[in-house]
Image 1: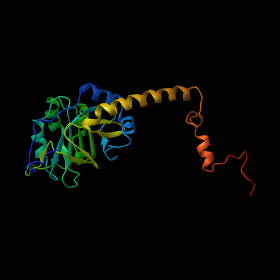
Image 2 (image 1 turned 180 degrees about the horizontal axis):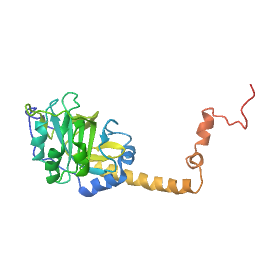
Image 3 (image 1 turned 180 degrees about the vertical axis):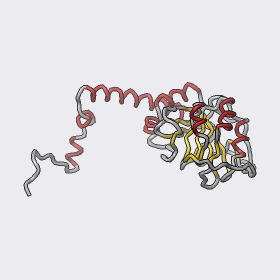
Image 4 (image 1 turned 90 degrees about the vertical axis):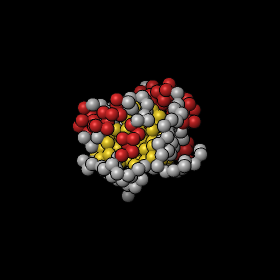
Length: 235
């Protein structure tokens, strides 16, 4: 990727993956997608949904914000498209409430599916009532100012993971995982294969078989020295 000419930029356009692929990733869910891409891309587990039951996927619109300043989120709204997910990271750690129901109303009007933010959100009762999903580090009533610049649609580090514009974000009750745009088709296919395997396993477990036998664990356990005793030894 070419070096950006200045850190204070707004990139208006970037490629977005096939919507059908993103829908497949959403149906697979965060845990399955994480496994399918060799346990990579998982954002820190402190990012939690503000209400349960939300499940989304979509291309990332990325935002770098200064600590305690949400000006660039207002800027980012303009470049969002239907189906996007806004991914926000402060340049320094912050717990302030960057996103509220007013910003969410504007994002929803643009067709944005959700917000993922490595900081705080507020007015969560209103966000819940309007069913606008958000995954955040915390909930905090402390507001922000609009005084300093950041950047929109540049690579960022959010909750420990690098996220580039157009990467696929998958989020549900298990957390948030990022899939590189160029890997989306491969990961979706791998997740679909895993889903078939898990369903076959589920049927066998429901029929009473043990995972010890289905997955041939006994020999490995024995090799590591595990012993079965009919009774505890007398001391």
